[in-house]
Image (cartoon, rainbow, N blue to C red):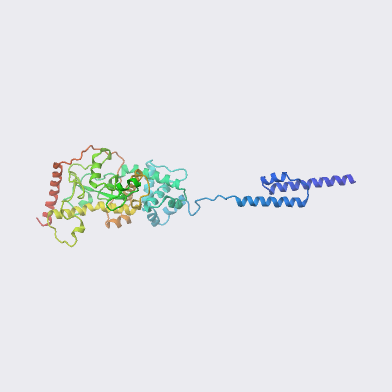
Length: 433
């Protein structure tokens, strides 16, 4: 009888010991288990409570000493959600954030995707990449601010900005080109002050100062006469307010005539020379040579010079007035470009080659937007008029011409005679002659 009782007590003790060991293995972590193996399992309740108390204190100290990782971008909508909300929401949001209307935004995305210039990555679509670029160039925002808006790291933002910039730069070889090279432009034909006098005019050419970022050792070369660090960009536009030629890379101290001659003297620059008889309008900073018509020198030209003057002093004065009114399209185009893309007034610290590509990419976007929405609010604000938008040029190649800049007296005389052939009859027609 005593033997059976002793055996039952032994089995009860072993069972209780197994239950205690099992509960201990579930409630403690692996480090506590190592600690428990060194403690003798005597079944003493006080000893077990002491072990459990030590285990709790050890686990608590480990939790307080360990930093819990938290995601860096966890505020608001993620990039793809934000893009879909903008494109499918109030149309005003797209114009405010991306500086273009929804149809223009989708058109540019389809063009980048369809031309095989740019493909979507695994996590970022073409729409999101273009939205990142437009937010950066449209508002001159830093990459960290754009990254917080799209919930991406600065490295991801920079990679997609460079991708879109290079894609638009390559697309500019097709988009930035003349679309009207023969006949009379509709804008000229529709204005009796310009037709038939300027029927051979294809557009206007001028330079503009774009903000630049230069290292300290080269800052003086980029400091223009307004004491600003800038680059001198030569642009050519037609009367549809589309850029047909963009030449970047010159410092702000360079004169317009120097940039002009460099652009024309190198065949690889691809300057679009007009056909014989046609010409571009230029201001008095450019030389008087064939295919480039400046105003008469030493005569009133700008509208500010005519304040309070009601009478014209001769055919030269009247020609300069009409010349300035027609050539003003390039100034309106510059104002529209800088108003839409504010990065051109506050260029980040990119290397010079990337700064030039930023300018070309913005001009490409400008032409595409003008093609899809020729009368958006930015254009109306810049010009106050409504122009008829042209069609998108096809993808055929342009033959490069090996023309030579003719700076001879004969060339200057030929352009002066062509200018007189416009100014004198136009003045006689105005006076009823």
